[in-house]
Length: 312
Length: 265
Image (cartoon, rainbow over all chains, first blue to last red):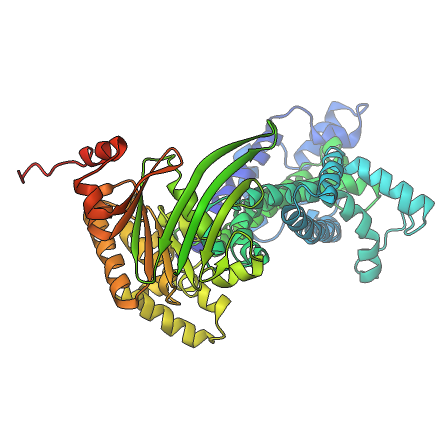
């Protein structure tokens, strides 16, 4: 319990640090949101007026204080370019991105574990060599490219899904899941190859350890030795890697959303960056940071559950 | 005869060089029930390989074994894997040099001690736990219930080796192979473990094959000893004879290498 509290505290500190960094970074970089809104032809008077209206002429510390206290109340401010509260603008897009990421995570775990276990248990068999080679190739293909390939094969040629015909999870949940399957798959594919390779390699190196010999000396069958002894130990580095992968998946989904025209946070992040719509960008970065921190917490807790040597 | 080893040779195959290197040559060994036999030799002498092959733990892929290992009428080198597995942990069990590495770090000690029962008997959970706690008590561990519920890293080196002995002895095997069980422990605990093995042998009648590089330790525990060097058995016989009247030059050197107690002249 004390461990969880400690972790929660570091989580809050991390997020605070991220918010400071994000806010001041955007205050420092050149470019005035008022100019982006009015266009380069605007007169100095109208720019000054809008700057004042947006509150951008006030001291940066005051604006930061207002921003942080707003967030604590669940208010991320107003979007400059959409004239809407950021929260309202993001809420549905956020849900879509989260759904996509969760599906990608689920697919990664569901595909990587059986594959890794199979390759470890049948290492150096012909199928293992073939799978390792295929793994190596897929590992080198970036998600957006495998996304294009999947669209071409399953969308255009086989017509399993209709590219661009995204339905919101609010109107048709199953339909939305169906549409998100291929984007999730293209995010998951490179992760599957990495996780399964890591699982195979750690399982094989664990298999040479002394406790495995002890397990055999008790009359265990190879299968029992693998599942009861080796796999448990091989899971520890895999969990660590999965934690890092989850953060990566959320960031990766932003690009893949573009390929499959999924209206998630990806597109709005890109338009907001080019339009200097800082409140939106800042909110998205904070939300992504929160994801990373939470997934790290989950990994730490899992880790703790798996490995009794890690002390509370 | 319980165990009869004849002309045991072990070769390791190098897949790339396509050459075989012989590591153990023509070992002969016999043991009756209740015997305590030692194998002494420096590292690389082939004593551990001999022990592992008797326990059926040499990897079959790159180790070629010739000769005979007959245990209770079954040739362990030729029998089916299933037959061998029925003996392992049941009739033949083994303890190793590094008790920490030999225990699974993620599984509670008790579950590891009772694993042989799970594999070889039909006992239910409660019975197994009862037996495991008794086994832990039999190896002189205080508070066996607490030990049962702890993880290997929470115990001291001596306690871990006792746990290993408890797990090896839980089904009362006919043969216990101890491969340098005291090497990783400090001297006072060494003596305790050797005494424990002696007691176990006396009380349960389990034969002990004790592998060590320490001739004086073998002398305090064993009746008979095999001295190995470079894969050969160079001398074998009654412990006292060999200890006091070593015939071979190598054995003489081993005896001379035993440190003298500076306080006893």
